[in-house]
Amino acid sequence: MVELLQRNGCILKLFLALFLFLSLVEVPAVEARIRHYKWEVKYEYKSPDCFKKLVITINGRSPGPTILAQQGDTIIVELTNSLWTENVAIHWHGIRQIGTPWSDGTEGVTQCPIVPGDTFKYQFVVDRPGTYLYHAHYGMQREAGLYGSIRVALPDGESEPFSYDYDRSIILNDWYHKSTYEHAVGLSSLKFAWVGEPQSLLIQGKGRFDCSTLTTPSLDPEVCNATNPECSPYSMTVVPGKTYRLRVASLTSLSALSFQIEGHNMTVVEADGHYVEPFVVKNLFLYSGETYSVLIKADQDPSRNYWMTTNVVSRNATTPPGLAILNYYPNHPRRSPSAVPPAGPAWDNVRARLDQSLAIKSHQGFIHTPPPTADRVIVLLNTQNTVNGYVRWSVNNVSFTHPHTPYLIALKQNLTDAFDQTSPPDGYDFVNYDIYKTPNNTNATVSNGIYRLQFNTTVDLILQNANTRNPNNSETHPWHLHGHDFWVLGYGEGKFDMFNDPKKYNLVNPIMKNTVPVHRYGWTALRFRADNPGAWAFHCHIESHFYMGMGVVFESGIDKVGKLPSSIMGCGATRGVHRP
View 1 (cartoon, rainbow, N blue to C red):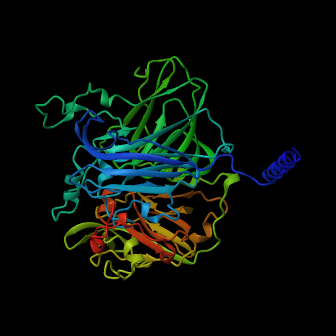
View 2 (spheres, rainbow, N blue to C red):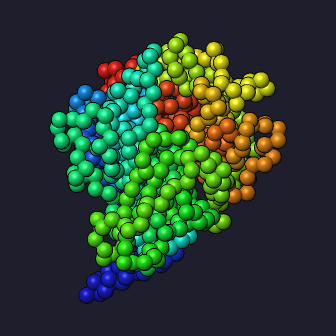
View 3 (cartoon, rainbow, N blue to C red):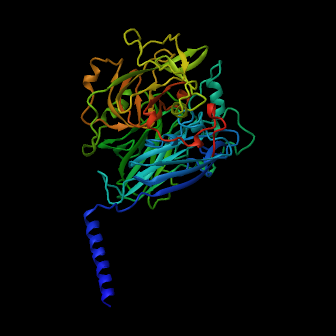
């Protein structure tokens, strides 16, 4: 009996000691979870805008399933390629892939493509809350419907600097009726054929093409059928009086867009995963690869529905606006709004778009102060060139092309023959180059050389826009950096002045982003830390422009990258190494 009491007393003391320890040590309320997805990628006939064509789907859907997670979770996606005649790769847009550069999903840069019939496992940690995307990164497959949303919430118990009742995601896209094969062949032929303007704009995968405009009507009435329920307008139901967080993203292949909601203002609160000092807009401008969170309040007349519209800006496009319905409960979700859809801003109103870019600042409570100076400055001039008779896009007169062996593998295994060891230039002829004139650029070349950055140094990137091959024409380009976020230090009109313009940089509260526009005949200044070991693409997010060479690759800290999985191999110099 005495031994039993002594034993119980020891247990009690141990229990009390453990209780005291737990009370002094901070223990996470919820452990990070593993979120496991199994996806099959295949072609299916779909009619997203009433016109029937082959669409790349994930588990039968386009857009694909939304990934929902919390900060710190591990995402595992087992991707089976059932395209049968095409390779595939998926990029997790905005996820920095810290410690997992081989899961970035950039064919030719971080992995060999996934061949037909293979299953590839992507595994990575979502280390920050925010709004992100995923999409194809092989050839021009994103154009064929392979894309979706990633929504990362804060851990339980933490709150954001704004409040709302419900959370919704909307992806805006442009849509072509031709296949990506036809577009790729036209862009890469000596007899150059431009992709042209898209036929439709989609809101959350739904649009409406006017079948009566087909120049060669099909004998099959199902080829274009306006009564097909697949192309019924997307409808988002709201409860009167409630506040909604709309995570609006663009994955267009070509178009810059404006998004607006009839009768409702939008308060911008997040951009590319970073909190914004709130500001109110009637029109939200988006460029391909950008994500925004806006707050709207369902405070209008609840007896009717309202239009959500999107239209092309920056190009004098023929594409009709995209339409969706903001459905006030309990009205029928398909009930057409009684008013005319609101007209978006004029396509050539550059000032309004530049003003929005300048208005985006970091939220006062969430400022990440940039380093005061840079260790290296790289100025990237975007131009159109003719190289050996082929029309190309170039950066500092160098048009990018992918190597057969992905850079990450070649660099880690020191395969010096896998790509050009000469780095592209850090700038262009600032003094003599006229950005307002049609370029000559007879000295342009094609190369797969890369920029090597000292690890953990600060790099400034100056994006400089110029005239295309067409007189009096300069296009807006959205640039996306893989593996990092950057501070947006400033925008300007005309040619960048390396002596005076840096004095105007915003070093106080610049927003951090992963995708940013460079406006027509203008410049955009970015700063980032090369602190994520790996090989990372930086490119124009317009599908045809990157396909035609508008991009570069940065390498830093490659010696710090862990052992590469054999599953990313199997092409170029790594043939025969691949093991699924």
